Amino acid sequence: MNLSNGRPYLAIPGPSVMPEEVLRAMHRSAPNIYEGALIEMTAGIIPDLRRVARTEHNAAIYIGNGHGAWEAALSNVVAAGDRILVPATGRFGHGWADMAEGLGVEVEMIDFGRNRPFDLNRVEEALRADTKGRIKAVLGTHVDTSSSVLNDIAGLRAVLDAVGHPALLMADCIASLACDRFEMDAWGVDVMVAGSQKGLMTPPGMGFVFASPRAFEARARMERVSRYWDWTPRFNPESFYQYFGGTAPTHHLYGLRAALDMIHAEGLENVWRRHDVLARAIWAAAERWGQDGPLRLNVADPDHRARSVTSLRLGLPYGHQLREWVEANAGVTLGIGLGMSEEGDPDGRGYFRIGHMGHLNAHMVIGMLGTIDTAFKALDVPHGKGALEAAASVMAEG
Ligand SMILES: *Cc1c(COP(=O)(O)O)cnc(C)c1O
Image (cartoon, rainbow, N blue to C red):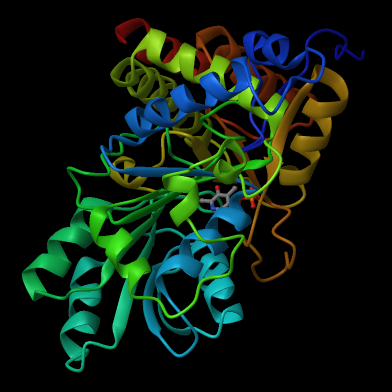
């Protein structure tokens, strides 16, 4: 029996579920981009973005996806021939490093595999070995969306300070902003990148770059920065078009305004707490299923798990059968495994991911978990009992 008609639930780690408030805000005719409401609204969005990033400093909006924000950030602080250090888990650190290589930047990569966070001792060794001070920046992915590993960005700052290394600290918070606690200024982050389509609940198409005063000075020392990526006019525009290096992303801005209003109405601390409880409910269910079957959480230690996405291994043939079943029969779309190839499974089809970022509440999570439980029964996937009870207990405790 097909039970998929009804409201679909896109439970992938971005784009995330869009609230009705965001969709309604975008449903309007084209606004004047030269004067009036849009100009005033945009001026108000910048400080509200800063609040979400927990920074007092510079914020810029780029029309682009996360990859655009990656390149924008790099373009302002590193040039061809410079060197950067990239401690990476999973896929996304490699992605950002690849953008840097495309700009002619030399990358020193430390790969920590796909189940573990950075080892700060190894980062420290690499910084101490840089006696000539060639490393201009350290790039850290806060939440790696493929492995669902949560990395310690404040720890990177502590290591840089302990070594007394002047490199900039750059963080990718595309999958964590407004989901997992992140404190740009308190953690000493110089550059942070984010995107609209994950915790910020707005369609893909806007990338955000935040910069500390140190990063701003580093930009001033650059010989040349491409006009479009240059953050200087965007941080301090003299005319409205300079925010965006051209026409504003009009409807995205209305959507973002609504999303920021929702985040601030709930309170950022409460947003983080909600993500925490819902994530722990998902992990509790997964642990129960795994007690009597092949399901495993990709990250064993809960302290190193993201609160916005969970990567799981079910093995073949079940992984992709599960995703296909829940989408076709129950209206839930789960994420594919990313970068999880292994022997006998070159495409990582035995893995799947649950996106739990942004506009998400208890009944959605219980419904999604119940749907997975139903699929296990329909597909004869061996699984432990009591997963939903375990999830419900976590939520009831709050
Ligand atoms: C989604 C994501 C990206 C890439 O964003 P796009 O919008 O797909 O370009 C980069 N880093 C992380 C951590 C992400 O989750």
